[in-house]
Length: 165
Length: 420
Image (cartoon, rainbow over all chains, first blue to last red; front, side, top):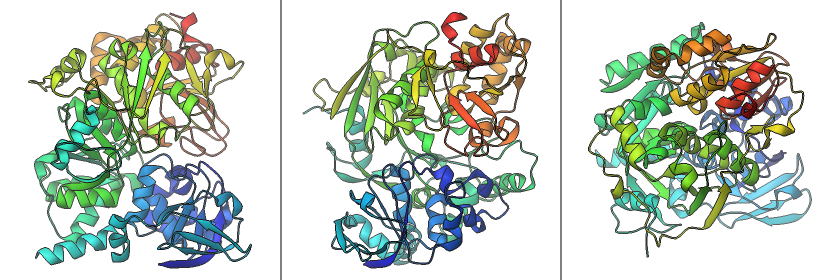
């Protein structure tokens, strides 16, 4: 799987309260509140993110609450792959469950806001087309690839139960 | 080669003789917990979409605690969804508005040493204080558990976190975990399981130990765990769980640990974490003239009966400073009743505390303890991220119940050791 898009680049310690603020979760229809994603960090993000864009952070992405709205809002904004130097584990699993691969890349500090990226998940390679650089990243672990290809855990489960019936 | 408690539990749950760090295993789940936000409203809806029943209703516990006691239409709607879903699905273990899930779950007798549990909330790690292995997951992941009764796990490395010596009066489990967070950072033990042990932990009350495992979430750990002992057995018995043999779930003497870290319990000073991360922890003495609009005892972290007793020990015969609001939301209804019956709550009220209903409330920026614009607060909760407990302009310091109480009395951050 290769994903091409522009980078939305942030630093370390982007927590799930920032990605999915409580004011969004207490709204009548929280699924529509993704416009509040990162409002305290970059109000432009939710407004301008395009489908297929790449979310890039440095250390400790997704720390804090287990709220799945965090990766779900990123997905609703258009994000299809996430790169960071390190991830909090619940957030990491939530990303894969929603079919948004979260890949460890130790060189995300070299990526700037708006860089055009091509992420090759099979090869484990991030090509920065703007800067003409290539960085190594994780490949999707084998036991998760099938789930991602199915479209996430829900579709994966649907397939499993369909087979069983 | 010996095994740690965690490895023994993961081996049992995955049907293997032994497991080793890095193994990917599929575990059979002994208990799954969801709350009103991660449950009926989200994972419950997803389960219905799959069109399959809960794999084993006796192993599911639903606890409403997040959007409770709020005068807000959307919050009431979440409660209605929760009530209706539990009724139509005939949920046997639905604990409605009795307090915060991580405390209610063991208090109502659902946790035993050796269990493999998952909870759809990050502080599910709390149950580790009873020698259970419990991890937090998200809503879709718990949907999978509810449908199949199983979950994949990567066997984590173990970290031996030894607290040597004895905590001094006015110093508590919260100070230990804030110190660890300060020293090692909010992702200090990413994907690892932290096993708390040593004389300092043995001498801690069984409830105070829950604060260590609760905030395993704030040191990046997959979970935290503590070997059960006589105190564990005693507390579980008080909560209706009997027939526990703590010897069954102990780490072997030759178990392998990735790291062995020692904390000097004798020398530990009360810790305060500055805005806006628990890792900004430092000795209380390094905070001078930090005036406070609000002090809050609450959450799954810092309002258990033992926590309320710590605050009462500081506050007895004293008054909350004028200009500081002191709010107390006991972790569970039962603990509030026990605190009232023994006089602990009376001491806090006499000092000027306002008692709020039990629920996640102020910790997640909901209800009467939500911080106001530009407000400065101190609380016994677990996170002080920007925008979590109030608007982005508010500032929150984290501390133990002792320190929160002392600070409420002083009107500014204060050392509780000077007041007890």
